Image 1: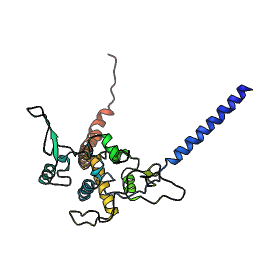
Image 2: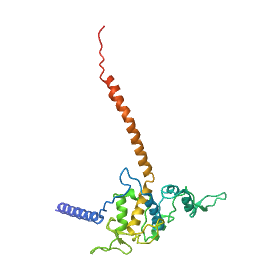
Image 3: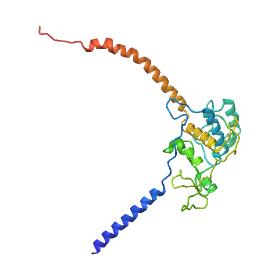
Image 4: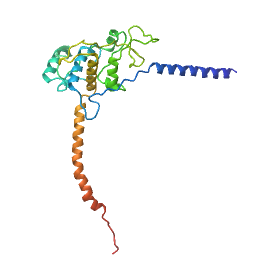
Length: 266
């Protein structure tokens, strides 16, 4: 009888655990973002470099206060969204720690093209302390790290809502149906007219979200346009080589292929 009771108890406990796991999976589900017609989505399309430049401006003035961009150096911006002189002037405004010098001490110097983007926080502990325990992730590969890529980032930037009835959030959290679980520590980062674009484009929420998403997609793959360009050149070269190869196969090699070799006894 005790064995039967233990078996039933184990079965019930297993069912409770399975139900809890199912509820956990359901709670972590997120709304699937819409599909947007990005200019760089198809193999024959390149990035909108004007949008990259505007997106970098959004990153500098909004995102860079919390999020790092560790894999992007100032030199990556040259001829992608800024001229070399513009990037040099931009880098020189940042004080970079270097050294040690001849006396074994670290020192500050103006930034160079080879320097990477400065981090907003010195370490993870400082970042969590400044953000109520939340750790803002690095954005270098954020577009590639998400299943829906560009669509997810844009939907997240524009998807902040009031929590629906029956959903309670802890203090300091914000409701966003596109984020797994719906509770996001990052407050809504964009608002209409919060910055002025250099080219005069109206800085609406959707425009800024589109531009910063394009910039982050470029940051995740700065060689994107060069890779596609090289692919088209390779296809043209291979196509040009295919014609003489077809001729050789059809009219030259076919004679050898159908030749019959016989051996006669002497």
